[in-house]
Length: 251
Image 1: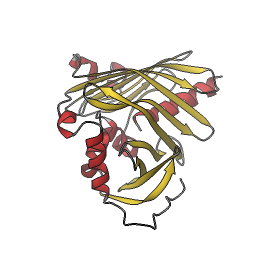
Image 2: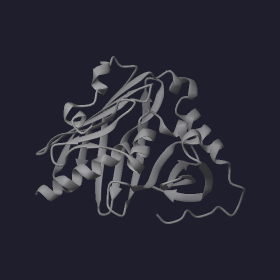
Image 3: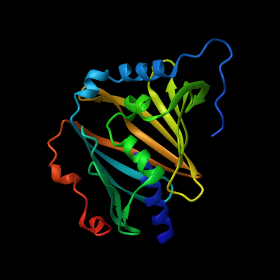
Image 4: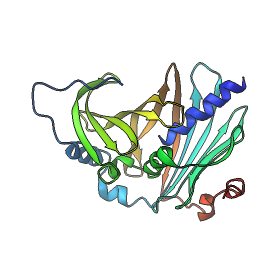
């Protein structure tokens, strides 16, 4: 039973985080920056993204077929701080955050931890409401590498690379420009495991189109997230982003 919960906690750490794509043969592929810009426009535009100073997200998590679930709350601020809190049934509270200096995790199973290296890099990228908007600044190279069917729809595939990170593949629906999914290697597992993330059910959230249903698949297991609330420019107490005492004891 404990092993099941350990796996669930490790998998949930990818929340803030394949085969090569088939190259299109019939026409020239668009540039990656054009695909990213089209997605930003499709969800509401850069001006509306920039207007988000804080964001609070609430969701229900379910590990399909395993009888494990919980509630998720994520907080963002425009200065790059974030905090993620999971209340997992049968386990308790699992959290992670970034106060602008220290990236940390705190688990009732594995204890407090300072996060660095590849895992820290990916968490920093995800510590904003719309990570796609920062891809050109964060990654060293981004390119449209082909066209592939993803979750039943034809998508442009963007391959993004940066030193010390394995390539990340993002899938953008050709007909709408929306971001439909990601394939990446989880840095939290020894040797790395491929995680496939799917984004659907885009709806308005304060002027920004937001995917209210997400799924994350690692091996035979899948976690589903059903988002219940997205609050842009929510009133968030700055102390929410403070490093917990258990983590401070590590440095």
